[in-house]
Amino acid sequence: MEHFPLHQPCLLKSLPSMASIGSFGDESILGVALISKPLKGYLTFCDRLSPSATTDTECTSTMLVPDTLTEQMAALYPCAKLVPVADARAVFIDTLEYLQQSGILGMTSLLPNSPTVASDARVGERVVVESGVQIDSGVTVGNGAVIRRGAWLQRGAAVGENSVIGSVGIDAYLGQDGKRRRFPHLAGVIVGEGVSLGASCVVVRGILSSTRIGAGSIIGNLCNIGHGVEVGENVWISAGTMIGGHTTIDSNATIALGCAIRDNIFIGANANVGMGSVVTKNVRAGRSVFGNPAKSFRSINAGPVR
Image (tube, rainbow, N blue to C red):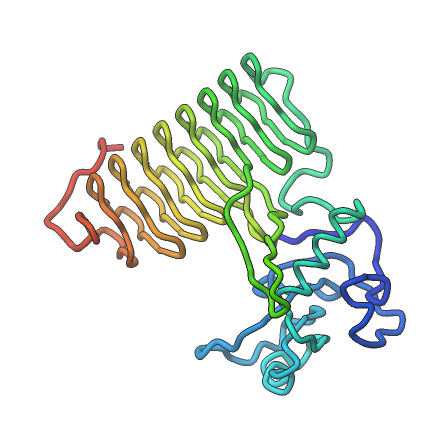
């Protein structure tokens, strides 16, 4: 369960974003997390009601909620500590920025406690490896690559020349106060064992859930993988493909040359996406799709047999 602990507990009333909201006594938070990964004492937010939402008695987090939805949220999350605010998302973003700038917000819990670079890792020339990066044994990093804080390259992974692992993606929220805010990208990138990333790829770090590439997957040159994307094991993604944020590509799927996959899409296991396709809807396991927009097609062999 991914979460982002604070280096020390923080009183709610000490946060500038909370100062004008109300009295919290001596209640403190221990970190931040997604609402879908609730932890007691961790701060999260929920600013809308989902038509499919059901009562969640396991959520014990401290939750920022819109003051206009307090009663409904209390019914959905009876065990959570609700903090009614005018604009829950804006207050959450402001809180994250303060915690980051104050230096008390830790990295993702998925990383080892003391990230290191293995002595036998082969790192090329002009490579930038920021602090807070874990590089395992047998990893190869090509010339000119940039590996940013919060990334984990697992055993035997290979990163091509000039690739960037852990860059920040596009994200903007226009608050009720008219201020445009960028949601901080707190999470990282986990590149699984034996993954091969081509030259000049960009893998964007996650916002509150890390971007992940499963073991044995192969990704061609010039690919862009958005924030929070989850790529399963042994996936083949050909050169020039763009994948929008929070998309999931299940194991053994194959994506051919130059595809564009919108955000929040699910592509099932063993699916095939034909060359140049624009995927705007979910693709079921084992299905083949092709075209713009991509539609079901006769069986496609979009990549090599693996």
